[in-house]
Length: 225
Picture 1 (cartoon, rainbow, N blue to C red):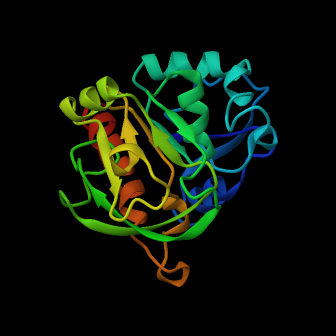
Picture 2: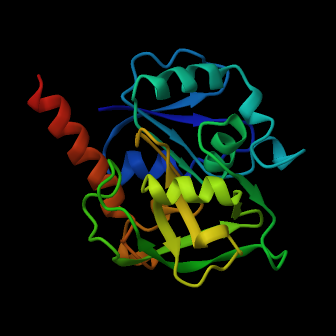
């Protein structure tokens, strides 16, 4: 599985480093001006502050040329994991529904939070139990997920809500912490599973998200090889 960790000005390298060093995956750090993603099997969009969060978090990155390639890969069914600012970028690009607002209490929140696994049948979550409570860190000032009532009803109907907060620290609609698109190949989430891969970090509950992805990709591609 060949992975691309896509980086914009201001993006964090955390996801790239953890995937490379802890998971030993074949991953390239791909600068946003490189618009050829043809040979990648998995796309990763990391957290951080792309373009300094000017205008809105993710708004400027969502209008760069590489987004056309990301949209094309998404339409082909390529798995895409977007975390933190990466999630904000895909919301701005329209690849996932909804929008991100300033946290309800207007403060930046940086601490471990309990999430509930609401859908363990996605490409990203099969190693978890349904309704399992896991501990994953959050680090954001604009992580309040918002959508209108109609969109929320569609997310619930289609089982697109993957993670919810146990205590809703930022005021997100429906306690939503992470969602998938209708096709199920794109996961956007504000919490940072890449920062919860080892006990020394305070939790290793994020590890099974990546294990799910690796296992499901291998089962599909090795079996069909």
